[in-house]
Length: 432
Image 1: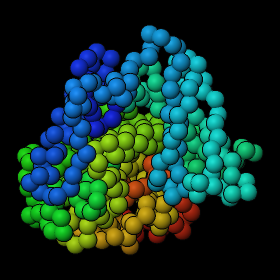
Image 2: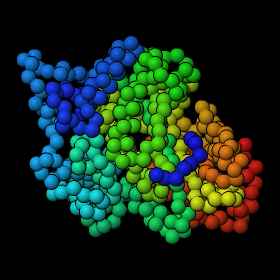
Image 3: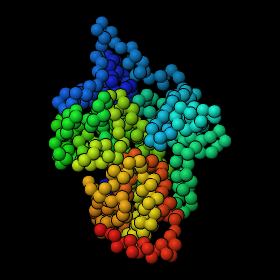
């Protein structure tokens, strides 16, 4: 990651003859993506995409596609709002649509809504109603127009956050006056793996077999190395359209694995943007007939895992003398290592082995320009005496509300005891 700067219809398209009212992600774009991936898979695997002709056998235009691309803006002020929330597993995303009488500019203009929590693992059958509170809105790249995606969190009818609502606590942390004054910035690097739908094996890999060893795939192009490039690029453009603060993408070390970065974002915004970006990626991969995996170790053996590295700085870190503030932050982080590890995602034990550019899960360490440490500090940060740190521990399936909130809490609000200070001073020797 570079030095942190100031914050700043469907895939399976059957393209109509007239596309003047097409969605922002047009039929032409989706068709080219599908065709390219089909060619890749024809070489590397037996996975298949469902593909539809531009016209029916009779030569008539597919009316369903025409309706999907229909722009209703000239005919009504009403919009479609897709309410999105996190399900009972803590990583699954749920959504449903409703009509809103006119375009909105802020989530506070939207009504609360409800759903059956017993069907999402979030409430008992005898008292199943869960209430959705709209929290952030984004433009809808699938429906276009004034339609929106709405990130929500979930509460009981009495107004208490349900257990899977991690946003509520994070919002409390980020609204604390001490945290607000430090203007915490985050840039989150979300890694993910694309899997063939029927066999749950990485995209581009021969079914039941393996490609060549790692090395030629990282940051590369080409049908024999870059599997899923168009999915990544379509996601990139969809996020930009939606208003997500996406800052880049790249192919990863393991073939079929990708990364996108979101940020710099301030406070709670980081979690909102990551969750919305994940939802858009779920939609795109689903329409492509590809499975999105956030498993931190999708393939056993000598293959890189998937993480969600979190770059972080406070105002004090970014100002002159900030390197000393970063060292103090690392001191605090060393003392709360177990608390962070326990909150950094399912399956993290398989990822943090000390191999494949990871630190050992059992020991906290930090170092300058070292990707095998728990916390990496950039060489430019050390040279300039100010900047940011990178927490390399979070797994790819981590909850960004939990990770960002915990980082702010540990480095800004939490104060160790005198005894803990002495212990931390010893642990600082673990700098590598």
